[in-house]
Length: 98
Image 1: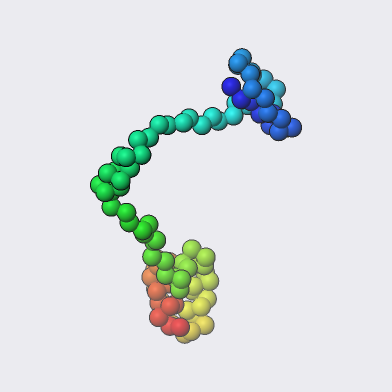
Image 2: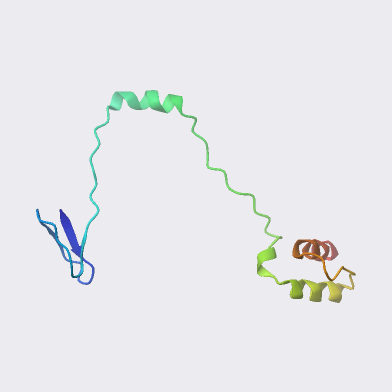
């Protein structure tokens, strides 16, 4: 098994189990035998799709603003609002007023 020293970065192989100090076991890779002739058959059965990116509205950065800041903006615009309204509702009013 291969071991690495976390302080020095030194690496060595040992048939014995090492414990203690700054030595940790390195992750080992395992070789897998693949029949190359089967690959096209596997790919035919899979639909290759582009990963979907989440829709992000760049104008709507509600997490980066506080309710107090939204209310200040609404007051500055002269927009009336319910003081007990939720953050999203206040934010929507603010965005309509711009």
